[in-house]
Length: 114
Length: 164
Image (cartoon, rainbow over all chains, first blue to last red; front, side):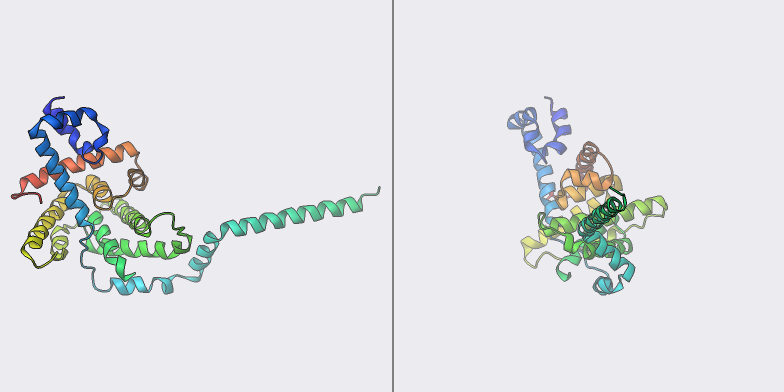
């Protein structure tokens, strides 16, 4: 591989060093491309550090966040409850339908003369 | 909530750049978190789940903002001003300057590359999640992350001093 090809592949390689054996081979014998890789590695290390650097939140945001459970409307609460328990409600409905159908069939059989 | 709201707000700010939009996206995220907290099964780390919810809110808001073609507010300086000092020793001060520089360059990236790069390299979200949230294929998400890294590296090279 030529240096230009390797340097074009480094942005992908830096996140997944096992992705290309050709790039790794080239890097092992090319100081210029290794220097390029080191810049990307330093950049990624810096980006990972940014995760621990939070910005200051605007005034009032924390109060708005604390008010969220209270601000949810009864309709929203009911929908949330249904969404969370949909499996239980679906099961109950299925049992009710099955029971109703069975009762209907049993009643019909009793009404039909033997 | 107090422990995580700053991280959630910062993630939204990094994606949206606008503090007002970021605050609204944070509220959207917390409403979703509150609704979904009982359904959180614990099979994913809470932090990862929270970042996923937050990035989803930020990307939805970004999409809405793009649709309404609102003029984008340059929030770079505000973001940089909000980056706190990492510490008081000389070594830590140097690191703080470097992170500030990285943050500034990141904020200069076009939106199309910034969001996937932030989610991947800052918050470590899996590529499949990023693709799902951006409604693009995993291959397209990878291409955006790789191009974002290249553009960020070029932006850093345009500024003086070492990377770290």
